[in-house]
Amino acid sequence: MFHENTSADCLSTLTTSTEDGAFQTKGHNTRILSPEEAERLANDRVLVSDFKQLKLEKEAQKNWDLFYKRNSTNFFKDRHWTTREFQELKACREFADQKLTILEAGCGVGNCLFPLLEEDLNIFAYACDFSPRAVEYKNSLYSTERCKVFQCDLTKDDLLENIPADSVDVVTLIFVLSAIHPDKMHLVLKNIYKVLKPGKCVLFRDYGLYDHAMLRFKSGSKLGENFYVRQDGTRSYFFTTEFLSQLFRAEGYEEVVNEYVHRETVNRKEDLRVPRVFLQSKFQKPFSKT
Image (tube, rainbow, N blue to C red; front, side):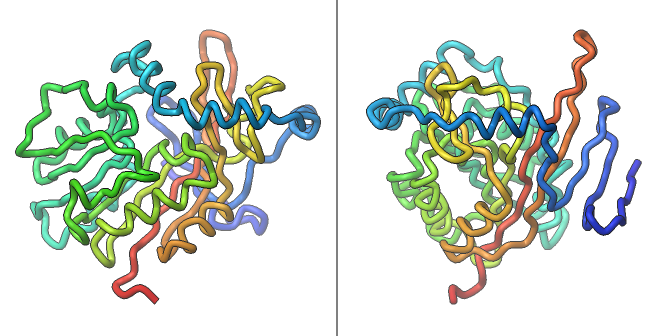
């Protein structure tokens, strides 16, 4: 069921009903905060010390390794929504059963990768993650004929050591860039650019400004503007469409789609409605870099 909202202040907003009965909207507007939320964010000015910030950067890999040790493969739900929401994975084919080569940058333990391989038999996937522990987990669908999985720090390890230049049809960057320091995000995009075919796209989904997770951080968790640290030492950035667009365009990409997804998650047990905000975007490598 689709609901088109054509009011002037909600231009290009599309509302859809989801499988669990909740509603989500897509558009270019940031979420409107309540007065209490706005006040709380405005008063949260104290940043984590430079010493601790350097320590968090140095220990980023260790913290993610510990995360996967604690949570094994159980923390993230398998992302069967990927082909549903990113029709590009199907639409970019020139014919129905064309073989696609994809790169899942930041694959974790394969919650997005393996549902894709299961749903689409004509995909070969490269998949990499920062955490050595994450890439050690193997699913029953794992086959060297269908995927190549490797450990990689996307901010410094050259993807060309594992993937040929200009060979990938689609790159997925799903809840990955937010875990990287904003000063280093451009290095990830530069790295990915080298292996993406001209004319092909990066599919991006990550946390958006004023997502519920951002509002839950307690005082003393702030690292910088829209950037926070969790109790386990992993970090999270919350994107605006403007910041993301600038980031990609500076590395030579062209913007195709860049919008907020506003979703209301319902906790029926506690009768709570939780406002989630994500950014879902698509950026293309041009046929010739200008």
